[in-house]
Amino acid sequence: MPKGYAIKDVKNWTDFQVIDFDLKKPADDDIDIAITHYVDCIGDGEGYMVDTYNSIWPDGSIAQGGYSTNIRTPEQFVFPIPDGMKSEHAAPMLCAGLTLYSPLRRNNVGPGKRVGIVGIGGLGHFGVMFAKAMDAEVIAISHSASKKEDALKMGASQFIATKEDPNWFERFKNKPFDLIVNTASSAAVDIPAMISALKVDGSIISVGMPEDLIQLRVQNLAMRCSSIGSSHIGSKVEAMEMLKLANEKNVVPWIELIDMKDCSKAIERVSKGDIRYRFVLKQDLEKPE
Amino acid sequence: MPKGYAIKDVKNWTDFQVIDFDLKKPADDDIDIAITHYVDCIGDGEGYMVDTYNSIWPDGSIAQGGYSTNIRTPEQFVFPIPDGMKSEHAAPMLCAGLTLYSPLRRNNVGPGKRVGIVGIGGLGHFGVMFAKAMDAEVIAISHSASKKEDALKMGASQFIATKEDPNWFERFKNKPFDLIVNTASSAAVDIPAMISALKVDGSIISVGMPEDLIQLRVQNLAMRCSSIGSSHIGSKVEAMEMLKLANEKNVVPWIELIDMKDCSKAIERVSKGDIRYRFVLKQDLEKPE
Image (cartoon, rainbow over the protein chains, first blue to last red):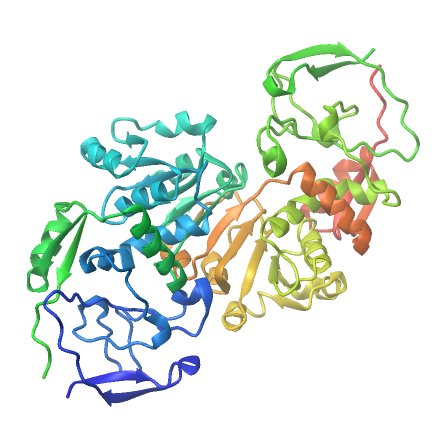
């Protein structure tokens, strides 16, 4: 029998016990989806208390997240995937998709709003599709023009290649953004320039995680009553809303499905930028005895 | 006759003309209050389009703001001071007061919210009083303990002296802040430490204007879905609400009233920190012929 960790009391979640559990035999088309949050918190903040992926359990072992072969979670953190949605489409939504859906929703994206998505990759392509599904005007902002055609297909009304058009933000001062979601993992993005293209009370939400420091002056933010924030995936409430929206508006991630045993190839290709736009790993590993 | 500038068409505000105008003879207890915003914008964002203090008019002259001897403004930017409120109390509210009221209101401060005010000076003392008047729990955060007694009188439920208690934010991780308004004009304030004491979706609003850069990592913000923002005074709507609240809840600024001819002494004392908490200048200058 495999061993697992069970939370006896979610309200005091440090209290774990090691248990034996039975595995359901996976069906051929099953994809294991990690429910990575165990939290003593309700509502939209629930994802922020504990994050199991790469986290250390009370016995010192490291949580494997989506690389786990088995997952056990309290029932309040399990939710249905809508009928008709393929598992390989649901899977990347529960991390990359929700990472973009959550800041769009928290910032009230909808009809009449102008949203910029910086970086058109695994994260950003969800941003373009979800903001469009929420009936906002979406402007895709990328380094080069190579993804222009794709971004317009995803729902962007305009595409900006910053390499060719470095002063793009000047044009938007008279038709400024309500929200810019920055998915770039490089700190080379010019944050003060983007702030100058925000509406009063507009926000930049950075969901890319550059290692470098953000550097800016308070004065940049003061002149537009603006803010820079970040967020971390999203809540169950948001996940369920996102799945419903995706099903209703036919938001389909652009993915490449490969076997989990080939994940090192996927990682190599990600580092070369050779994926449009998200790999999904299909579980094909031996189950532990 | 003195000369002035008049805006012919507020919607296209670059169109000015020089006009002659009559001066009303000031009454002995008049204090000139600058209405410093002329904007083509409605609602809460109206303060962000043009700022006349220190701004350059179309002919190259510099706007004097509160140091003006005469002020003319479009009627939509003039509003009444509530009956019973002294001019010397209204005056500092229209800049320092509104600078604090606006971020409190925009961040929905009210009963059940925990608000930190960093820096107990001309700005911060309004933050403590207004947050208390809005029925929030207010925690005053200052460098030294010298203002403790005052801050508790203003309505703070707790006072933190960061010099004596440098790890104060650790204590708040289990009872975190909804909002921290930072009035410090020094960048020495430890922003990442303050972020760690925010609730999920909490904000830091910096209304102090340090010349140094803010430096922080996106990851600091991501773990609490938090943001750092700023704002710039406030709107007419907010100003009228603030005055109404101040009148109803008896919010009285802690001021020292001096003649405008002594303003150089006031500036010296401000630079030494020798004012609790705001100078108000009474107009006593000769009117221009």
